[in-house]
Every structure is written in C-alpha cells, then in structure tokens.
Length: 82
Image (cartoon, rainbow, N blue to C red; front, side):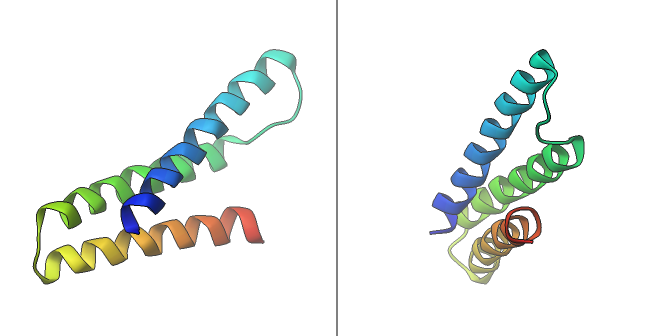
C-alpha cells in the first residue's frame, strides 16, 4: 500500500511538472512553484521511506512504510483538500 501511494505521489508530481511547463509556454495560470516544490520534496521523501520499508523487515521498515503513507496523506490534504 505504501509503495503504491509513494508511486502515485511521484506520478502526480510528474503531471504537475508537465502542466507547469505547458502553462509557462502559453502564459496561462498553472501550478505554482510552491506546489511543485512541496510535491517534489514529499515525493522524494516518500520514495526514500519506501526503499527503507522494502529493505527492512523489522520495526524500522514498518515505521518507514507508515512514514510514506503519512507523507502522502499530508500532501493530499494540504494541497488538494483545503
């Protein structure tokens, strides 16, 4: 579950980056720099947490998986729900 969520966050970040590139060429409004940086940093951290979760089978791995889930939930609630 945490791997799917981390990959989804990477996908959303890529879509936002493409959208930003398209809107800057046409001069229309699009995702801002803060949104791009926030999603990029969270996606990077979620991927790192997921790699740790995949490689460790102890408590550290479980905590890393939960960290990835919490990161995705925080980004979705901060940027997309409110």
